[in-house]
Amino acid sequence: MPSEKFQFAGSSGHMLAAALDRPDGDIRATALLAHCFTCSKDTLAAKRIAAALTVHGIAVLRFDFTGLGSSDGEFANSTFTSNVEDLVHAANHLRALGKAPTILIGHSLGGAAILAAASEIPEAKAVVTIAAPSDPGHVTHLFADRLHDIREQGEVEVNLAGRPFRIKRAFLDDVAEHNLLAKVTKLHKALLVMQAPTDDTVGIDNATRIFVAAKHPKSFVSLDHADHLLTDRADATYAADVIAAWASRYLAPVQHAAAATLPDAPRQIVVAETRANKFQQQITTGPHRLIADEPVAAGGEDTGPGPYDLLLSALGACTAMTMRMYADRKALPMERVQVTLNHRKIYAKDCEECETKDGMLDQIERVIAIEGALDTEQRTKLMEIADKCPVHRTLTSEVRIVTKAAE
Image (cartoon, rainbow, N blue to C red; front, side, top):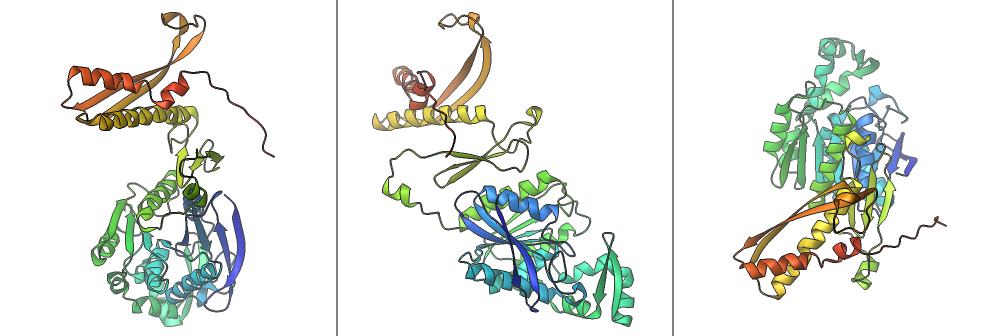
């Protein structure tokens, strides 16, 4: 996952530190990601969500709001309104690069800011909130015991997540003025609300209010037992995978010139490590992207099918497709076919019809269920056709694999 670091001017003129994470292949879409209150672009949740999205061909811009992380300015001078304006400036910067964001993602207060900024980013088609409050003023509960002092003194240092931050009266006045749900009602973009029911920082009732206020299309996905900051890698990766799948409905399909001119040409398969975990791989073929991994027992994190799973899937898909082509061509009343496959090692000596008699052999067991008003002769013929699928023939014939180093 290549990452480009740069700066752009925020709403107050201060330079904001940003990182644009890019997929290894073609960019399918660009997302703008807003981090949580007092967090930074480099929090675990932000980095892991961005990394997982790049696997799906989505570039992600994450940046530090004014006065946070590596950005210039004073946090005490920032407000919810300035955060919203910073997001609009970030979108403007992406637009100038020819990568205007079509997906907006906000975590916690960043989610509220994304909702407030969405109307000013016309290219955005899909908006995602993760553990977002339905009212920006909700964040003041983090320093509720100092609210009186802030109003009386104008500015007070508070402790948030073990770090000191200065909060001004202007911040309190600003969050109190925002009617976020009114913005949600007029969003006019697809909305995905993600929330953990057990979140003890931003309660599930916030997600309910946002969801009810929004017009369709809208979706809700529970993050189950995830904590507010998505500190578990699996939770962040899951959130990103769901976002990518959900947003695909609202994104324009990727155009591939080579595929358009040579529709029947074999597709090149590119497999590359994602480095999201020990074994995870991104598989790219034309406009399609898949994830491969090993099961937990083998040292992976089971984020996708394993190599043998993919091999069996290829055989199963080819079997069903070949049978469907034959049934349609012969006008057979086959309604549906289901192929179940298993792979295991067997002793060669236990295979009577095998030429090899020493050591171990790979055995694939394929069970085919055929639905439809078919007679015995038709079913027998379809089972014969199953053995004629191209992948079956490849697996049972001599295969030559030529390996060479990339130049």
